[in-house]
Every structure is written in structure tokens, then in C-alpha cells.
Image 1 (tube, rainbow, N blue to C red):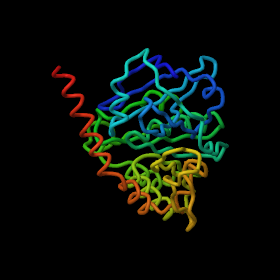
Image 2 (cartoon, rainbow, N blue to C red; image 1 turned 120 degrees about the vertical axis):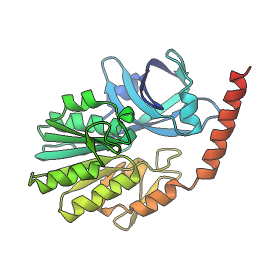
Image 3 (tube, one colour; image 1 turned 90 degrees about the horizontal axis):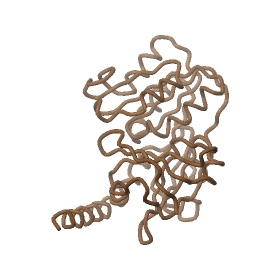
Length: 281
């Protein structure tokens, strides 16, 4: 079992957990993830390793409370234990000195883009980070992204922080300004990654997308996370999560993410009803 050493609220429905996991912390690399199970009868869900500290034996997980399991985890307090954490899983991100890289994180995607950003900067790249959210209240990690970037551009849909608009608007401005961009890495909602990919493909800029497919076992056995990349079936958990964004069938990915929507709504409803009853005594 893995103890929660620190719990912190980052924004609306987004929590940060620093968890004791020495073996995972020792091996974790940027771009990898874990699969957690919070109780004996609970489902298994993937979470990106947002940071790790091998010396302290800890990993950092950023969780957005959207489904039954993430909401239930949100009820856990500092000192409580997560039943099991498997990892690190997935293929690490490709880190080398590409030149000028643009790191794009949207919404909860800011969390997984951070460790890759930090590694890209350490590898000697000029790092331009673009992070965006619907509004200022949903932004987080601005200080950490700034510390490991040469330039940070913030966008919000409603203009409450930074530029009003989408991350693609900021990226387009960079491209139109004539800045040489050697690589783009994007993580966030599938529709955001799709639009980033369309834009960079138009200008011939190599682009990597870290996908957020539905997963069950995380080891390539169940097939739930399959995606189509360059006309071939790939498994996000073992072949990814990073793929050439210009080859990803984002429409199929978006469709597959909706496969279990009815079941997710039912589980959420039952959990919320149960919680309400407990609150009422």
C-alpha cells in the first residue's frame, strides 16, 4: 500500500498527491505513467507521473475529479493509503537536444507536460511552453513551467489570464512570427491535440502527442487502449503514450473515449448518491 504524504488542491476539482512509492520513483522517466487501484473492489485507472523524487522515494500524481474513482480518491486525506500502484508503465518520452521545442499543455494536460518540459530544458533545448485552460481558476503549475522554460505563454478561453483564446492561437502566432520550431509536444484534450496536429502538419513541424486512451491493465493485454497510428493498430500503454501526432486518427480516439459514457454516468451517480446519504447521516 502507498501512503499519501501530501494532498493539495491546485484548482477546481484538481488535486495534487505526493505518494510514497520508492521503487517507482527510482525508475520513473518523463512520459511514463502508473495504474492505481484505490480499494479492493475498485477499477484500475492510469495516471501520469507528474514528478518523482528518487531520494525521497516519492512520486507526484495530479488528479482531476471527473469519474467515480477520481472522485472517491478525492475523499482520501493525507496519511491514507492507496491500495496499489503499478508502474512505471509506458515508453518514456524521447528526450534530446532538438533545438527549439514548443511544449503545449491544455487543462489537466499541464501536469504530464511538466516532467517532459523539465527534461527537454535539461537536455539543452530552447523551451517555449504554452499552457491553457478554460479560465484562470483552472490553471496550475505556472511557476514550475516558468522555472523550466525560456518563455511561457498562457491562454484562457475567457481571457481571465494571459491571452484570450486557445493554445492553437498562441502556437499559430509563434509560427507566423517566423520563429524556428524544431519540435512540438502536445498533451491535453483530444480535440486540442488534433487541432495542434493539423496546424503543425500544415507547416511541416514534427509533433508528438501523448494520448489519453481508456486503459484497464496497462500492459498491452486487454486491448482497451488501442489507437490507430499511421493506419496500424497500436496500444497506448506499451507502444505509447507518445506518438507521431500527424499519424494519429484522433477522430477514432475521440469516439472510443465515449464507449463507456453510460456506465461512467451510472457509477458517478451511485457514488454521489451514496456520498449524499452519508453526509446527511
